[in-house]
Length: 338
Image 1 (spheres, rainbow, N blue to C red):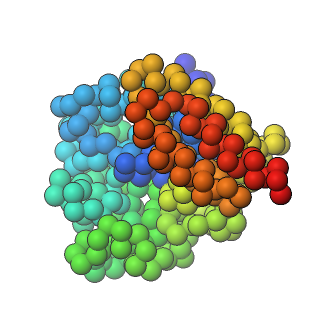
Image 2 (image 1 turned 90 degrees about the horizontal axis):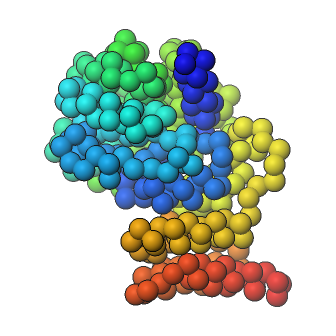
């Protein structure tokens, strides 16, 4: 048992070298199945789920995932230590490899529920939450945050926050290298307008070592992500990985030393068609799966037609996995013609 726990912990720590960020409405279980086809090694994250939804709602639905997604982390949102502990116990029982607390999301919806980035102003409360979660599982409990909010000093305030997380027993920090401006900027603007400060994350990592610190924010290529690996313990990509999913096929080689050839678009489409057939038997509509696949052919001849077939035909009544093969055919025909 002890050896198994050690092996699981080591596997998650290794997987953090590259992770795909939790993204609301995007990183659902269908998206994660696709991403796992592309990378065997990276750590995948769920969408954020509130602790209240798990504890007081349909926990089996919120916690559902396919074992092939592992290693996969559940991201929780909340600020009630007892409720977060209860949600963590359920997540532990469900088999998640890591449980992460969201202290980075700047959306109005999140602020009104008193979780997300607004909690960076209350490090003592967040520490209490982390301790409660830590006591509810032996699996890693981690925190995702910003470098600060509003007019906070990003040196003193971030150090104070990080020290509180370390004291509470957090196993790792994922840091988005931007402030969140909770007043005056929309969630979309908060992803691009506040300036990136990678150096601040580098200093934090050096100060907290050996606690793992992962960098998030503004990483738009694998080359940019690789360049950061000398100064952080891992990198986290979000929208770039979602909109350009085939770049994930290079992750295992670049970040984990894999020697196998990257998976091909053809193999991915075939596997997703089989997955769609299985899901159809459970009542899942094709468009709920296909919407995550629109960027798979980006950069190839026929990519526009590929996207059109998947986005339009997958929504038609009775649509089945043949739609995926038609989309693939639009790309392969042009490739053969050229």
